Length: 441
Image: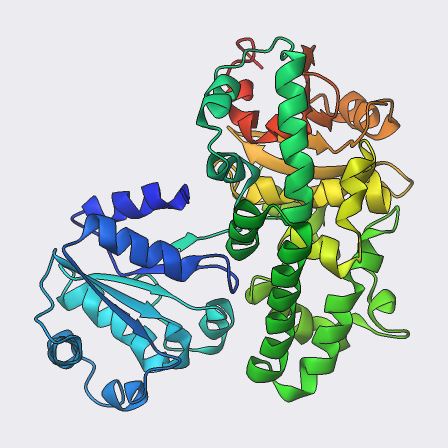
């Protein structure tokens, strides 16, 4: 299936000043498939090397890690010469051999003509752990789960997507809204893990999809014991299993006490960091003031946690796929947490969004998400129903007067005086719509 990150990989391949590339992302989001498909389509030859199940890699990188020596050995393993510009070298699970990560520095400095693409399921953890990481000598891309936009492509709805891309700020034809919302209900159940999406496309059987999702969740739990320090494994499990309960609250600020009674932040910091660096959770911080740069106003003691993927969150929450037949009930579950998960997950796939935060008063007003764009802060209020009356966004707009505010809904597209109401099913089109706003907004 098509993944938008392929376009970034092709740009990297065409760049004569490229550095070794590291693709970050959680286990089973499709990194291996993407790298090999990229190599097949853009290079004459591909040498794929998995450092987790190929014996002898520690020994190969234990001595001299000058590029020519490494390339001679790899050519011997490959059975043919590795040629600059023609062969793509793929180092998968590269974090298993830290010296291989270190060698990327020398490839960048002494042999930049060789194309090297790396990935690892817990690479983010290794990057924090290893002091010899080649800072400044590598490039990064992050692969997220399949977005709703990519899900529509996988369902061969390119013409429908083109119609959405061409939307103005006027109401969308109801027939489009209905079709897109039906697909969105599917996506809430199937989620964006490639294996689950492929199983759905093959079988159209939610039970079969859930078997795949349950197996993925089980593999994550196995990773806790396999890769995390033994002393924090129980704490990782406490945080991980508390996600549904955390998100079911009206105020979704993370509470350590919901992970384990009496738990304190200092006791769980390492476990939280491990989950975040492995890519399994999404952590967004509260900001004290919605000003650019947002990072300058972060309150690190207040944050919310979301899951990697909406489909996996549904399974962890024991929410039956049958809920999709009950009108828009799936959008309201857990006090709208499924919808918030969806919106945040889609924003992670949008190149215009680098970081996401939230804002809250000491009382009850809260803006679900904020992000910086074009030197302004854009607030996003996530609504799952058609009743759009809520005081938080109104209070925020009265206080800060943002040029553009966004509210998601199940109603039709509407724009008036700086407020863009956008249907959930076309949220991926957000920035195309923002660019069509009247001048000065």
